[in-house]
Every structure is written in structure tokens, then in C-alpha cells.
Amino acid sequence: MSGPLKSIRVIDWTHVLAGPACSYFLGQLGAEVIKIEHPGHGDAMRHRGGTDKARAAQGMSTAYLTQGAGKTSIAVDLGRPRGREVFERLLKSADVLVENHRPSTLDRLNLSEAQTRAINPQLIHCAMTGYGRANDMADVPAYDINIQAICGLMDLTGTADTGPIRTGAPIIDYATALSGAFAVTAALYQRAQTGEGAFVDVSMLETALTLMSSTVTDFRLTGTVPKPRGNAANSRSPAAGTFACRTGHISLGVNEERQFVALAEALGQANWLRDPRFAERVARDENAAALGDEIAAVLVTRDAEEWEPRLSHHGVPAARLRSLPEALDLPPVHQRGYLSDAPDTTGAALPFEIDGTREIAAGPSPALGADTVAILRDLGYDTSEIEALGEDGAVDRVEPATVG
Image 1 (tube, rainbow, N blue to C red):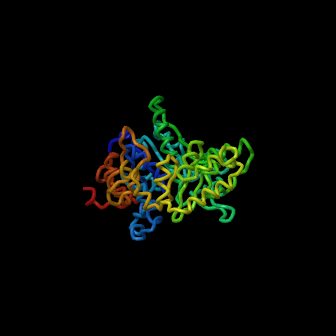
Image 2: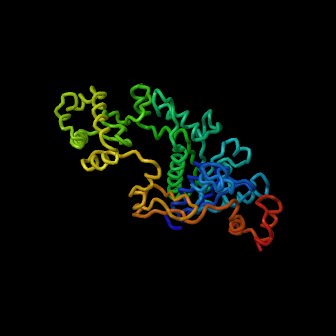
Image 3: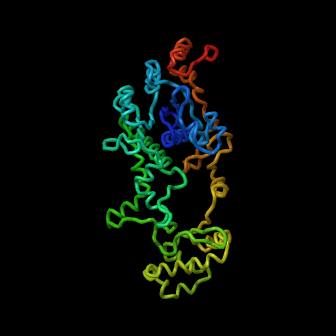
């Protein structure tokens, strides 16, 4: 695999979503990714997540497949001395370690960032946790749903009638994965200048708050506690939001003066530009409810599928509400090569191109321990040593026929 990180080896000692996705994104940039799993069961996400129970029963759930493609897998028991020795050899051969264990787990295994970097001083150790290090909540476990609840995001989502609502996808997990990959690439650049490794401390909570940056800033500067706004736009413009049509819904992002003029023309309501309630921005803000009612009354006369091209033709930022299947059929998804057609792979790439190209990891996600023997050979173990590791239980039992 080519890419800007093609000479980088990443040890993926993670589980669930955020950690595995971080190493997957690094793999999309060309890094070699070796996934460390415990013998017997492996990453818990292999067996849960998604709607395909048959795949999950085989240790290949769709949630696991989402960030498994392009990796190799070795099954090692770090609790056994020989397994620990294998892990240390891996660390010595690596550029990056990505892990998402609680600090107490690392301390119990004697694999804190100080200890991993003593094994390999040039190692970039990326730790992904719910709340980051050096605080009273550093060892508190957390999943995406916990962070959405604790960061204030759920309190802003929904309406006074619905109460708080979690977002429909685990966005904090994947945003944290991108944050981690971003930080690792920065640390690798720093290492190129200094020759020294680094400890990268990634917080899910801080990632969530970063996604809410403008809301956080407004509260800190004004003291105004944000409230749920339903489908109203974050800009608070009275002509922005999501509106019902005769069938379907349309979202409007009308924030600038020229956009309001274009909206009035597209909706056949040029009279709004002369109406003292709506002609100027200040007046529109003062009469926001009335303007919203008038926009809604016009939009409900046609289908969203009719309004979308008409509004776009007039230069109005607008989009019809779509289901996921509809979204995946959009021209940019196909024309930019975002999805792969390879069977049993995630298909999802990074959301950017470099020089007009992007990598999508090819090949199926690895079965548990599928590459154990090949990785051990790469680390310098001979056939008899590999057999001994299997007999000891340090790795998934390896039959002589498979290593001869």
C-alpha cells in the first residue's frame, strides 16, 4: 500500500470503535497496522454491533469490519511472560502504538507510556481515553453515549418536548479517532525533527467539546446557557432551519443578505424584500416567528424533491433530508471514490484527498490471529520458538503443520 505513511508501522492495541478507527485511518494513509488481540475471543466488537447476527457469530460483525480492513492480526496473551516478550518485540519494531485502555490497566500490565517508551524511545504512544490524563476522572470508563451525555451535546439535541436525544451515529467515537490520527501524524512530524518519540494523550470529552466550539465560546463570553433548538440552524438566522414540505423536508442555510434575496426570488415571494418586517436583517430577527411561518407556508405547497433543485439554482444553500441509502447514492460519494466495492470491507475512506488521490484499504478484515505466524517470523522467531509460544498459550495454539 502506498501513501504518506507507507514506511510507518502501527501497533493497534485497541478495542471497540474509537481506537480501532484511529489505527484504520492511519492505515488509510499507508501505514502498516498490526492488530493485537487476546487469544480466544479477540476484540469484543468482533461479536457485537450492527444488524448482521451471522457475521457477528463468526467474529466479523459489521461494526468490526468498519475499521478492520487492511490490518493484520496477531493473538497474544500479554499476561504470560512469553506473550509479554512478543509484545515488547513488536514495540521495538514499531513507530506508533495506539491503545485505548484505562491508565490503571496499563499500570497493572507495566505498560504505561513511560514503560513503553523505555522499550522504544522513538515510539509514538497514543493513548485514547474518555477524559484524558492528569485529572480526577482519568480512570473512569466511557463509551460514546456516555460522552454525548456528559459533554452537554445531548442536552442541546431534540426539543423541550422530546427531551435530550443522542445523535443517530457514534460521532464522538469517530471524531476521537480522527483526532488521534491527526495527533499521531503531528507527533511523527515532530519526531522527524527531534529524533524522539512522544506521548499523545487523546480525550473523548475534549473531542466532543471541540465539536461544540462555537457553542462553548458563546457561553463562556456571554453566560447564556444554550437550550435545545430542535431543527433550527445554529446560526439562529430566522430563514435557516429544516422545514416540512408537501412530502419530505428541506433544510435551508440562509444566513447572508444575498441568500435571503435569492430565497425570496426562488419561493416567488419578492414582496418579502419590500415588507418592512423582513426587508432588513434587524427587522427579520425581530419578526423571526412570522418569517418562519411564511416560509413554512410556501414550502409546504411543493415536494422537497421539487424545491431542492429550484433553490440550488437560485444559489440558496438547501438540501433535502435524505435517508442513508439515498445519501450513499449522491454523486460526490461515487464520483470522488469515497466507497470501495471490495467485498466484506468497510468501503469508507478518509474524508479528503491528497493530490487528487486517496487510499482505501483493500482486502478483507483479518480473522482473529490470522497473521500470528507471519508476524512472529517477521520478528525473528524460528519454527521451534513459534511452536513453543503456541504450546505455552502465549499466542493462539499454533500447530506444527502451520509453521513448518
